[in-house]
Image (cartoon, rainbow, N blue to C red; front, side, top):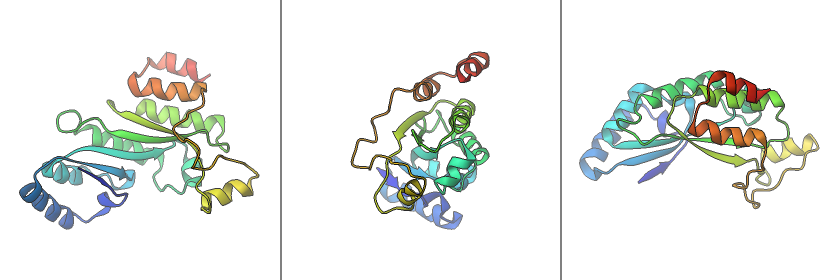
Length: 192
């Protein structure tokens, strides 16, 4: 069973405790929570939900760059993302399947430094984790589409495959980081 709800972790403690009691007593099966926003990740909420049966989370990171996160209107700065990852890692692997983190790549407004910031954040994130890596695609009639048009940029629409990741060095490094944290000296060399 899975819940796809960006605001699930924002539910009050009282409501989460009610949910946990009911879920555990009446349903009693494990569940996953997808769409977790880093700002709402709290150890005490994880304890309640883990007791109820939560065994996996998927959190949207999108980027490790504050500028790109602001562009996406994502309210979680990299420090909050890293703190959320540390809380999540306290429950993995004893109680949880490793978490999945969403990353968006191939944004034409990203600078080299924005990409490096994302790679640095993922290097620092506690392991194990899996990455769901997406190439930026635009949903028509959204603020994101408007922002791209204002910049004179043409980005593929969502109807093209957002799972098709161009073969770029930074994209390859994302996959490497999800599996293996190289020694710091080697990682820094790759970033040059």
